[in-house]
Picture 1: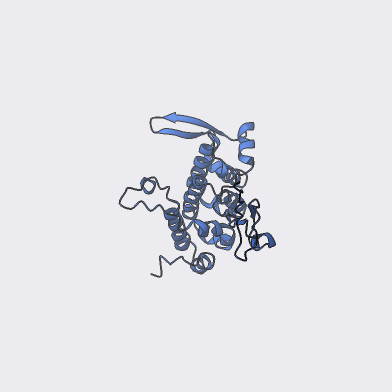
Picture 2: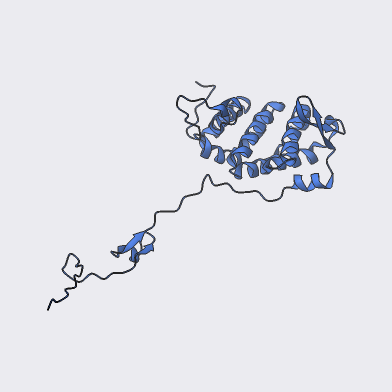
Length: 243
């Protein structure tokens, strides 16, 4: 009569090995030392993860009809039809609100805020400089969304802002610590397309190139203290003037 022999797996010490269910655990814990433990890798830092902004004041004011603007269509596309002369607007009231709308990604809020900012910077002149402190938090909020489209729009606005009037570039220098950390994260975020064509460069949507352009505009228009303050926040930046 044949006898059934049960084969049992032994460990390296010759002891019967238990068939335990695999346990998933974090690193550097007591469970991670068990033979059946499966150690999880570290979580991602989330530096590039999008952080949606909450409802903006711009949207609230637009929905209420408080802005003297309307949408105008012509052969070149859409543009803003201002119901009053831009030069007569209260910049302390309207410019921070339009900057607040840079966080928006849906139509028509995104179009009106972006185009409204550029129109006001184009015609603002000496009215822009006194409003700079009120613009820092909306700029910081827009960059902190980590949304690449929003960041690109904000960078183009920053370039226009420093060129919009005298002393504006120098007035921004004390606020570099609030504006530049996000730029430092995305500075090397370029598309490596090899031999292909990177169409984002033609559309000015390559975030790494836009950051370099913005930093150079800050240094050019920021006075003698601009470079050392940029270098402090972004150590890899090389001067476009000293070199």
